Image (tube, rainbow, N blue to C red; front, side, top):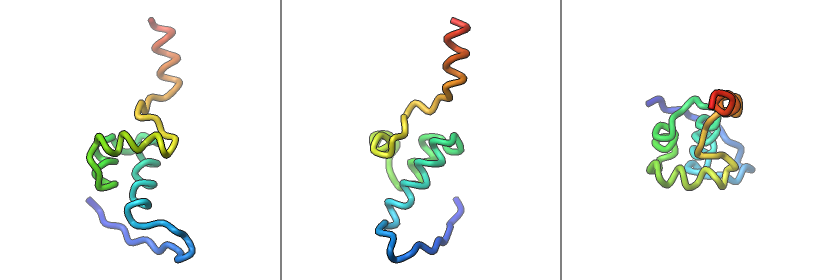
Length: 75
């Protein structure tokens, strides 16, 4: 795993764990990380990460709407 050093303004009231969760959540939402990868990046278990996704307005069901429409059409 890569390590990233990021300069965050002092005026931004966010700690390292919160910032890691924000980045992991966004990458999961974009489909760039699996649930397990995102949880690891955030330093959490998969279960805890999944439970916290809702507080970031991200669904655990990371399934594009276009795929859902296609599946309904094929049913």
